Length: 245
Image (cartoon, rainbow, N blue to C red; front, top):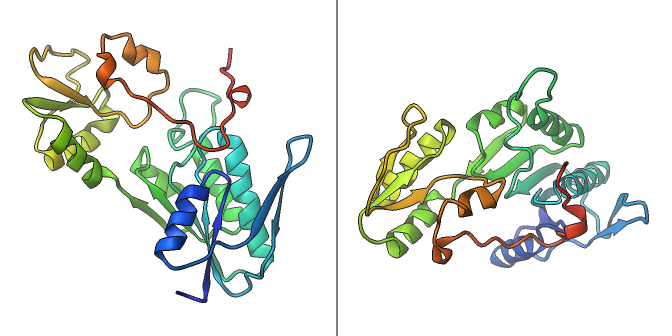
């Protein structure tokens, strides 16, 4: 048990944070997160962090803005309490897809989020399978990206039998599809000039890190037994998840 470190669990990272603390023989630091009636967040550290490394476990999953601001506020509180180093552990990095302009007069929101994290005093970022490796270039601080590919490849080998091909629906995920194909010993196929080819009798593993509208996928005739079932993260509320119209 290290005495020079503390783990703080955000509202979107409590389960993971507590499990990490248990494995490291640590007790999560006491941190109170309050919300005022107008939605503003207030954080209070209930134990000293002076001179210690602080690991903030907080995913920026939906509602993204709410959890992102909470992460920034907790990091700022740690910096002002004289923590020696603040490490953000962000399994899901919100705005990870916003790594380039989508047209004229549009922002690069991923770059803005990187600047905000650095401004509040985050010294190190640990995340999982960024949408694009170029996101690391937006940061002036160290960024470590771990991958779930080996673990998921093991699952594919065990659960998907027979002749199988890993397909990337767009060119941006071809490299990741190749990693899955090599790791799970499956075939690999990338888009060919926008002309999909028929693969009769072969099972297909669709390589896509984020599915924006699941109805587009399910309407293509995917059997009910293999459709994706998602579980919203803790803190998700339907009334906070509104579709822009």
